Amino acid sequence: MNNKIYADPLTFPIYQTSSYIIPGGEKYRYSREYNPTVENLGNEIKKLEEAEDYNVFSSGMGSITTTLLSLSKPGDRILTHLDTFARSYHFIKDFLGQWGIKSDIAEPGTDNILKNIKKDTKIVFIESISNPVLRVNDIAAISEKCHEIGAILVVDSTVPTPYNIKSLKLGADIVLHSASKFISGHNNVIAGLAAGRNDLMEKIDAMRRTLGTSLDPNSAFLVENGMKTLALRMEKINSNAMSIAEKLRDNKCISEVIYPGLPEHPDYETAKRAMRGYSGIVCFKLKSNPEKFIDNLKKIVPANTMGGTNTIISTPASMSHRSLSDGELKILGVDSKFMRLSVGIEDPEEIIDDINSAIVQ
Image (cartoon, rainbow, N blue to C red):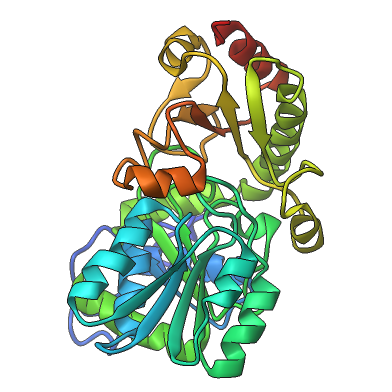
C-alpha cells in the first residue's frame, strides 16, 4: 500500500511560500534565508562547477556585490581590470572606495593583471572572458600569484559558462555567474550564482541573508529549467559563433573581428588550452554608419543583454559600458562602431546574411 499523500514530481516544484510552520527544523524559517526551490538550483551550479558549496542571488550584480562586501573591509585592497562589466568596475572603484577599500585597476590582459597584484592585495576580481573586449584571462597564472600572497581570486565566468571553462579547477576560489545570460538562456529571468570554497561561501551566505539579495523561487525554477539544456545550447552556440566570426573576417566593411577562437586573437593560446569552446560573443568594428546598420537589421535584435537562444546585438559604448569615460573607452578600443554580437542557436547563415545586408557601404 502506498502511504504517500502526494506523488513524486518529475520536475522540482516551486515552493511559493514566504515562511514555514514552526517547529519544522532549524533551517527553514523564512524564504529570504532558505527556500527548497532555490537550493535545488544552487546544488545544480555546485555540480556543474565541481564546487564545495554554492550561493544563489537575485541578480548577477547581487552575486558580485554580496561576495565582495562579505570578503572585504576598510583598508583592504581589491584589484580588477578595466575591461569588466561597467557596473562591476564602478562598484569596486567608486562604491567600495567610499568605504575605505582601496582599488587598483589594471588595463586589459593577463600580464597587466599580474603586474598589478601587490603584496597587500586581498581580493583579485577578474572575468574569465572580459566584457566587452573578450580578453581571455589566464586563471591558472593569476591564481598562482594570488595564492602566493594569500589573496582571494574571484572569477566572473558569465560569458563562457561552466560548459566551456571550469574556473575552480584552474585555481579560482570563487566563481560567479549572471545566470540571466547563457546559463538560463531564454532572456526571461534575472538571477546570480556563486560557487567555491566552503569557508568563503559561508561568509557570503550570511551576507546574502542580511542584505536580502536572495532569489525568488519562480526565478530559481526558470533558471534550473534553462540549465537542463545548457550543454546542448552552448555546443550549438560555440559552433555558430566560430562560423560567424570566421565569415565576418571576409567582409570588407568590417575593420576588425574579435573572437577568442580566431588564431589572431591575443589570447588564443590561453583560450585553446583552458576552454572547451570559445562561447557565444563575437565583437566586430564597422567601417560604416553604426546607426544605419542597427536600423537595417531584420533578424538580429538590438538589446542590452546577451546569452539567449536568439541572436542579439548591442553597442557597448551606448549600452552596457555607457558609464565609462571617453578615455576609458579609448583604452578598451570601444566606440560607436564597436558591436557586441551575442550568438544564438539559429542557422548561422541567416545571421551572416542579416549582417551583410544591413551594412551600409
